[in-house]
Figure 1 (tube, rainbow, N blue to C red):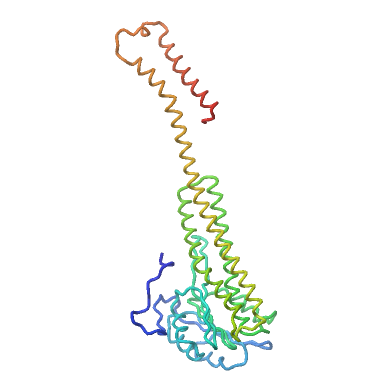
Figure 2 (figure 1 turned 180 degrees about the horizontal axis):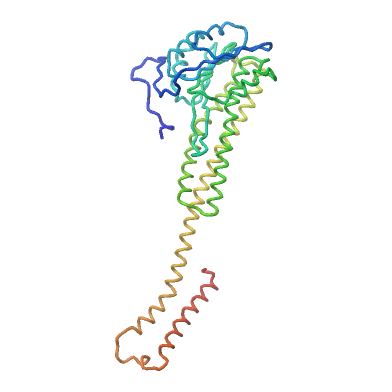
Length: 354
């Protein structure tokens, strides 16, 4: 449940805008990389300190500065102060339990998204917070740990093909957001395969562990919904933004990204409905199996009631019972027993009780 509800990490009476990272340290050392490019050239580097990337604020080229690791609040404060970020933005960057949101602060736009990862062995979804700051000719991105889904964007910039090197930082921000949303489809596809396999198991032979798996998958869908549902408001807000930082040429791409977000939400809702119906299917299968067992036991008990009655009568210790002196009484007893049992079996079969 810690993925859904987090304890408040800010101190009581702490001043708004205080940059104080209080979560776990997820990387040993903060890594800073930047790509500075235009249509004619590219400069890509990994630097040892934030001071090396600060001059990029004043260059006419498009600059993408990516920071992996948030445990050193001084780095976030240094970069944020140099680029003129709002103090509340810097506070939200290090507070890694933000819901996806969009904020406009005049000369920069702040966007929060969740980058999703799937552990295929356990079918468990994990996420990290990614913060984007879109400026006049730069994009800042802050991640919790090493590794991301942006390599395809980096490769397009390196190759200089398509629109990546021709358009501005707003298109770069769109490309990064699009990479995250595209990865949602990858996660959903793998979860969909898991759900289909689970559905086949339920149809063939439902087991108690299948019910536990269904409950686990439903929790993952809740987690996905929490990460994805607010995102459509963010992207929709960017398409309607009147900020000069979002150019008209980029709006159609943002609208397409909005459509992709709606598709992700629809897929999550569909999977939730499927899991709910699978849970009902499991309960129905268990109930039907129990009914079959009870029906067999009922048929057996019904057949043996008259047989027990007959056996009980002739098991009494009365001295004067006329049938006890007959020569063929024992054979007659079995004929009666078999006739009663066979007759009832025939009746039950014609009535389709089994």
